[in-house]
Image (tube, rainbow, N blue to C red; front, top):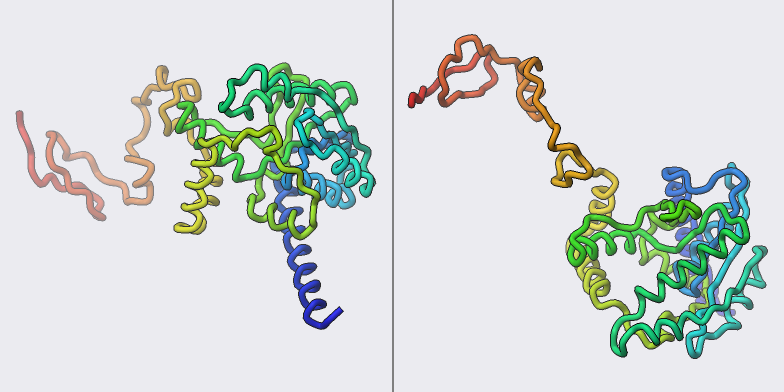
Amino acid sequence: MSEAANEQVKKRTTRMNKLQKRLRREVGSAIADYNMIEEGDLIMCCLSGGKDSYAMLDILINLQKRAPVKFDLVAVNLDQKQPGFPEEILPKYLDTLDVPYHILEKDTYSIVKDKIPEGKTTCSLCSRLRRGSLYGFAQRIGATKIALGHHRDDIIETMFLNMFYGGKLKAMPPKLLSDDGANMVIRPLAYSREKDIAEYAKLKAFPIIPCNLCGSQENLKRQAVKDMLKQWDKQHPGRIETIFTAMQNTAPSQGVDREQFDFINLERNADAPLKGDVAEADLPAFDFFDVQNSGHIKLDNTQSIDIVTTFKP
């Protein structure tokens, strides 16, 4: 191998190790912040054959060797019988790993094609059928957590989709209890950026299986939101990070959702001391003794208030 080729391999390895450390740190932080994994857990990692689920399983295997708690992993793929699905790829890859795995077969493709009119997106029904099958299998094998490969960009995109098209301010939580209470879903990549995952998957040469085998185009609304966020990220570096931070710092009392905050029974405290607005907490105390009429009051840094103009009805 030539010196130039050796240098390229060295750079590639260095970059891959750097990305792996970053992803491992982010996944570790997400797991700790949301208590995603506990002692004795059996984590069912759902593999679709896409870059995100490959990266998730890879990082969880890496973390499993260093984690302060003991947990087990099992990889599961659902073959939905889409025409042209390369069913040999995932088993061949999983055979190289020291992780047990299951390949499930269920013809949800035929159900989707029967129910969805030609030309309409099939992703919504397809994902619901897939979720139901995976939830049921998780209970059969005694999995305590179901790990999905959604990343931070997915979470932010979903928030804007629900806001723009659904009239709701909700996204994908890093940890979710299913409606029936039987399954706990976790998203270990919740803190990770898609562009980092994509680069890592390329460097690791994961055997990616395309998602468009069913002939369905990517949801146009999601693609529009994705393009909007990419443009923001390009024009205003750091904005995506700020949006995600904002999602972690909600203030129900400062919003308008009556379900999240009890505005109806909100009352003032007539006996509260005169302190002014919280934003003015650092200003010196004022003497209100001489204020008898409504008027134009000058607030300055003195210890008293001067009535500049008094208005009388």
